[in-house]
Structures are given as structure tokens and as C-alpha cells.
Length: 243
Image (cartoon, rainbow, N blue to C red; front, side, top):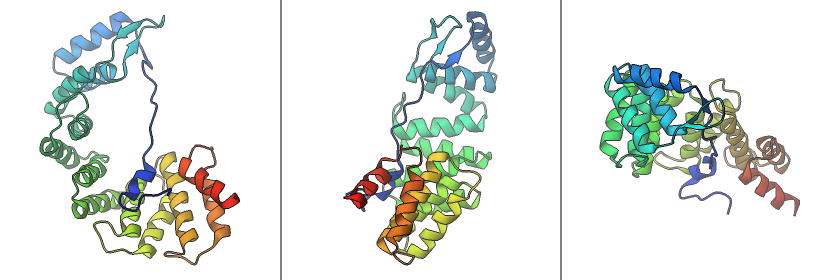
């Protein structure tokens, strides 16, 4: 089975292989940044946290800052406490996942809400994901809707998933299809998210849910979703259609 109907959102999750030690700077630049961060400059604290999170090399390729999730979390917390909304959002995600810091969902939601009130556009979707992780699907849907209403195309896909499979909201495939269609044309959406929108539209056409069933249209949508040959679920379904 390509999609698990109990947790269909997993089909949109990726195992990202982010580059490590992508940052490059000189030892003197690092010392200056660290000194600025120690003077409680939130932007500098954020940058220091990023360097510890991803690691940093000098221009000769030697490791300058060794990766340390714990140190990254510590500096993200400092930046968050000094009012930097993106750091509050990141700290909330780290607390939600227990990444480099002890997992604490209540504190995670507190920081994410602060980030949302401060205007961080990503916080609403992260709040939704956190609620979904703890099984509160109704509240998750509410926050996905807030994020989608604010123009987040990736949140619109998640909202559509909840409508399509009736998770935390009354099942409504037509509304789900509308969400997926809008997401395919959204400006504020990741490329992976756009691929997922085409893929999920393909699922709707293949199952005849919310639209008239059409294997031909479904195939075209799956091919568009897998345009870079990197959408495993779409590739698997296309193989099944060719069998």
C-alpha cells in the first residue's frame, strides 16, 4: 500500500539529506560572531546556533565548528529568549522532536505560539504538526487552516489530506481536491510540496474521490509529481499502472 490511510500525511514526509559543514568562514570571522553572540545579539545568537547545527569549515576545508545539536539548541534558546521569532519557531520544533534538547511538547507549543504571535509565518504549520503528533487532529486541522489562510501552500496540502481522508474533520474529497489544485499553483510552496499536490490530485483521479475517475488524468498527474524522478510514492504507483 502506497498510502497508509491511518496516517496519510506520511506520504508527504521526506528523509532529507541536508548538507553538513556547508558553512564556510575564517577563524577570525567565527570568533567575531561568537563574541557578538555572547553580547546577547539575537541575530548573532541565531547564526551561532546555525553553525553548531550544521557545522562549519574554514576556507581550506578544515572543520572550524564541530556539529553539536545540544549547543545549537542552547543558542537557539538564547536567541528565542531575546525575542527573535524565527529562533522561537526553531526552538519549538526542537523541543517537539527532542532534537538536541529534552522533548517537551507543552514548552514546544508555548514557543511556537510566541513565534506565531510575533509574525513568524512557519509557526502555524509547526503548531499543527505538533498537535498532530500528539493525536489532537481537530486542533491540528484548525492550525493547518490558519497557516493555509495565511498563504502557506504546504499547509494547504496538509489541510487537503485531512479533508480527503476525514482525519480530524468531516471527510470532504471535493474540498480536498480544491486544496490540492490551489496548491499546485501556489506561490509560497516548496518544490517538494508542489510535487505532493500533483501526486495527491492523481490519487483523487485514480480513486474517483472528489472528481470523476480518470486513469489517464491520474497518470499525467503522477508523472508530473515525479518529474525529477524523486517522488517515491508516485514512482511506485506509475510502476503499478504499467504492470
